[in-house]
Amino acid sequence: MIRFLLFLLLLTLIPAGFAANSSAPPKVSSEANHPNIVWLVSEDNSIQYAGLYSESGARMPNIEKLAQHGLVFNHAFANAPVCSVARSTLITGCYAPRIGAQYHRKIQPAPMPEGLEMFPYYLRQVGYYTTNNNKEDYNLIKGGEVWDESSRNARYQNRAPGQPFFHVQNFDLTHEGKLHFSQESMKNKATETDPDKVIPFPYLPNTATARYTHAKYLDHQQQMDQQIGAFIQQLEREGLLENTFIFYYGDHGGVLPRSKGYVYESGLHVPLVVYVPDKWKHLVPAPAGSRVDAFVRFIDFAPTILHLAGATIPKQMDGQAFLGPKVREASWKKRNTVFAYADRFDEKYDLVRSLRKGRYKYIRNFQPFNVDGLYNFYRYKMLLYQEWWDMFRAGELNVVQAQFFQQRPAEQLFDLEKDPHEINNLADNFAYQRVLADIRHDFQQQLRAINDLSFFPEPYYLKTGIQNPVQFGKDNQQLIRELIAIADLQLLPFNRAEKQLKSALHAPNPWKRYWALIVCSSFGEQAATFYPVAKEMARKDAENLVRVRAAEFLGLCQVQDPQPVLLDALKNAQSPTEANLILNTIVLLRDSKGFPFVINRDLFNPKWFENEAELFIQRLDYLAR
Image 1: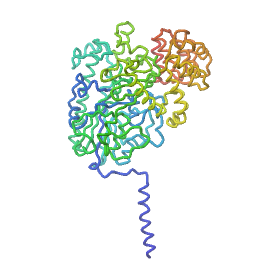
Image 2 (image 1 turned 90 degrees about the vertical axis):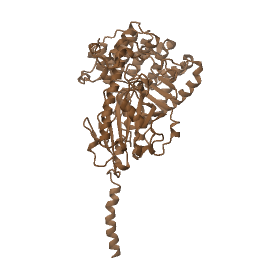
Image 3 (image 1 turned 135 degrees about the vertical axis):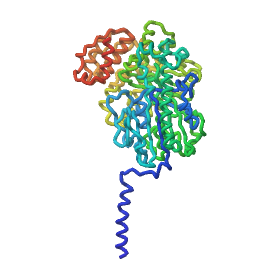
Image 4 (image 1 turned 45 degrees about the horizontal axis):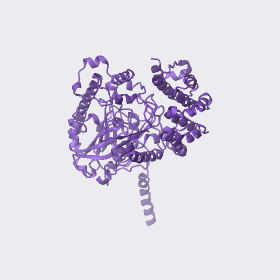
């Protein structure tokens, strides 16, 4: 009888055991025991336009009120200066070039790293209701369990009674596209902010267009603040403020020229204010009203939210929590660096990385002959971009204003306390060589640590690596480091780089030859000894894109007409992405060296024109002007 009773008891325990190990997400007890978390996100918005950070910024009373009951972070940074890459970093807590999410706009979405989900998934696992209204813009395959709701109609109010929530509310009034106005609109629509009281940034021309554009953007800031105020009032009416963390931040920098799309501070340094309810102030190691000097980066946002919510932070994330249990103010003092990246933006290619360390900023231009101002169809919808370019061609800019359209050095170093607009490069200044060596060392360690996938041309990466980008990076770790080493020959005097450069030009691996030719272009006429081998490579190298880089080198140095080789390379392109990369070189050579390319659309596969969004079409339209 006793054995029978024990058997019945075991039968009753078995289902409970199965339930504990099932895939159903565990539920937290109630909203009372776990804070709600809200993100209020303004688009294309750097600190220069906010009164909390700058005397010339707009007054935004609703955001300033949040700050009085929370924290203002003086050093918050996007890791990328454009929407999709920045948001891919936010949603994963990972460096985008490590996981294959670094290109804007994506040609093909990358899978998430093995074993990692977008962070709201983990919030759902501990019982949160997750809602996003309404922008995603990820360069990754999302999966099905990230958001309970993600649309223009997504509402946290649809959660179960007492269920904690994580909600994202996006505000697009400050987006770059809101400054794509016409000359007629500028004449007929006055701004609330007086343009005559606006002083343009020193790298921009001081014109009526510049002042009006800046004034209009300050208007947008104030209007956005009103929208945020309305949202906060809604939370207050619902009695939620006492249990809700509110993060206000910009999704990356912007939005006047030389900000969005560039790793200057104007493209990366974003406002961040965190409202802290009294009930949860023990999770924040500073009193309300504090300004925090710790560096926080977009890779840190996902682990921070998970930590505040009591969820486990996945090991695959690159960031670290800056709020939550056991985060101490002393740990903030160690946070003084941010690594950033800029690759393709729409049809415009470049490869730039940066590291800020305290007051100093290091920028590494891996293709320094790709001028900042290289035409980009979306950027140049803005009248101020058009005017700036016209003034450069007319010789009407001063030295600082003209930098945007001229070849850059491979390395730039800025002292941001003395030079907040990054216009005085200290890399060649003898007094700063110790600072340069220190930050360069840290930068190179960081770059090698992530297996940066951008050292392979995008068409090759899409063909061979996108199925599993992280594993592809690991499998090619040594080759990536060798490609970086070739690229770093740019940092040596030519007489010290020449022997290694010669070896790389004859390497069996095509991407070593590819990077060796980029280095030759960086040296320009100093690398004249390699003209003969470059001519031979342009004529018959087995890799189409190596031929392109050889023709580019010869064209930039104006020793051989690059047009026949590049037109033939276009004809041999295997994809629209490869064609677009070649066209990037063609636009550079036409606009900077005057080669009058005439491109017949018959060169291309007719099927490529069926998708009007193909980026190479935008390049062709520009070249046809």
